[in-house]
Image 1 (cartoon, rainbow, N blue to C red):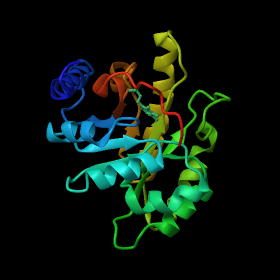
Image 2 (tube, rainbow, N blue to C red):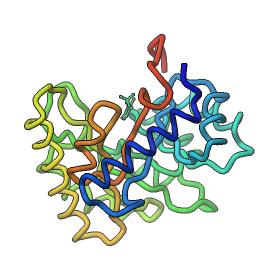
Image 3 (cartoon, helix red, strand yellow):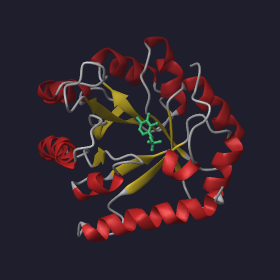
Image 4 (cartoon, helix red, strand yellow):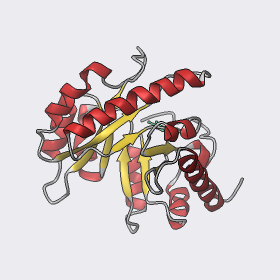
Length: 233
Ligand SMILES: *Cc1c(COP(=O)(O)O)cnc(C)c1O
């Protein structure tokens, strides 16, 4: 296996190339290293190579890694589904939550955010292709939810997170990203805190960047194939 430092640098090069091809400004796309299933020692190597932002899907697993890596100055993003009974720990330990799709969860996060911490950064997860199997808010409900979220004082609305439908058709995929980008522009015009369009994963990063992503969430292309898949939460 390639050394992880080399892997990080080639990934950062690929992001830079995609930005150049799309004539996007340098530094306008951030890398979120999606580290679910990987042990703390692997994250530490990536952090030592210069990566600061990590995304996790499972609370218990994330808390274990956070305490093992507490000596590092890392930024943690929660990107998985959220159950009500997990909000207290999420509010206390994460810097960002990208998977907000219900006002109830957001209210709990705001109420439970420790007051000595900065407001919790949040993104609304949008079910951009209206897939029955996917979590996320329907396109038509996003502005309503944003309005409610903007009233919670311990939350800061930063933008949208999307996972497009799986397809081999680049036109369909491009269309999903374009819908997300349009919605993001609308939201950014309404709320000055909105600056993040989180879209693009290992398989569709270039297209997402071409269509306006400001944050790509990359697991496999950085850490390698997740194996065995995560069995429990
Ligand atoms: C696992 C995951 C990713 C990373 O996916 P890869 O295909 O491994 O890059 C990105 N976003 C979310 C929400 C995930 O759950």
